[in-house]
Length: 538
Image (cartoon, rainbow, N blue to C red; front, side, top):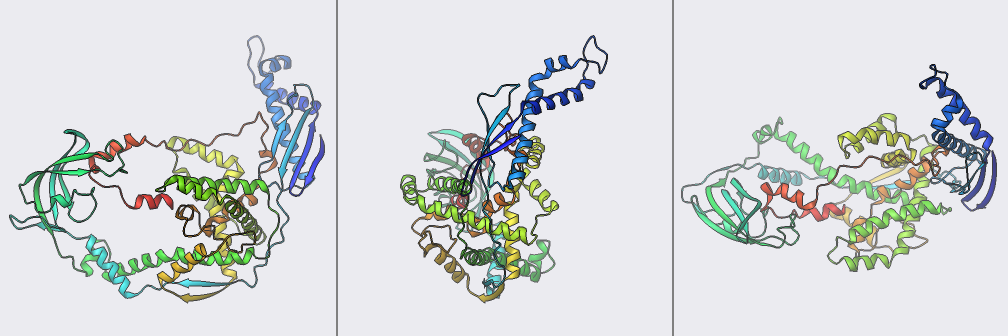
């Protein structure tokens, strides 16, 4: 095998690799000797099939297998001999003029990882903004929780329904006088004033009493989930079976015991923990941003353009997706397009920080254990159909890059936790509003540029679509960190003929109209949850 370097500029490398026809032929002969004893052919005793017949029957496949194996071994040797650290999957191509029996000439181009001096982990100083939870907040949460557990009892005969009451009704929905799927229910309890149903539905039930029958008029919202109903005027035939009033829910040990707990104090402890958890993520985000700022300062090495482009494409896909869901998609797209260069700088910074974190992690022995990896794999497999999960397992096990991407978030968290442990951390109590304001000040109060020392990865507040679409600093470096940590091995460089296996298809989503129809029987009058838009942007 002959290797000739044809380009060496910055982090870019290119080579021509020649694999002799003699080596490929020898490999084919070896495969023939291996499989011949296993073949059965009429007219020949077992194991006595002539080699020339074996080649005639299986020649093309044997040659293809031998060629692919030779290419993988050649890539192994190239990486080892040249002491390369590929940043991404090398681009390997076989000359168009190749024919069986001739030497195989490969052209290989790739980018290598830069040599990075491991950043010092000494002298790091961080501030941890802690939001204490007051007894008053816990009591308010207990009261709110108790309100959700309220029970209803039948009202006095003849009572007219009011906000806060519960009515039990039959309803039948119609559009243009025709009943529609999902618009019918019997003995349906509805809490008036809850705002859970489409606008105007609950309000028109106020004042009704047991035995009343009426027809109400509503209009489905323009963004209603079932598109066949969105924006349509509808009527609902109503029959009232019961009017119920809310009972007073006492806050005591009995409330906790009804929930399977031992006491009110235990319930308060659980709710206190939930309140603390709500701000713990913000606290970590603020700490990590400070940590990354300190790491980034003083490190301005060249990064592989292919990694930056891959990172940018991820950012851009997310931004354009979110912009498409804004009230004015066209304006939102124009806004992010005008700052495309800024996002490319963000992508470069993410990659650089990722390489730094990866270097720190490897130097200090930070690892994701096999047990942790199996847990990640099991969690990720849940998004696939049961019959496809085994294929997904095999895909990840055979593709180092896929495994690295799966491992990335946990690995980065472990590196960050390692650095938190090494840092000198000073705690400062703040209010929830002060913590949020501190994060927003970092997001909104900085103009990004080539000398930016802040990994906010957000645009100013005037860009809600971009800001919501961007991941926070806790995720900013993960893709690059893992691409660096698990750069593709040489044997993974595919020849043109050796196509990688595809990952199994994820669970197929039902068409929107069909999905809406399936949900309609129970939820036709329900209005679209307000949280849906926000959840889509998280």
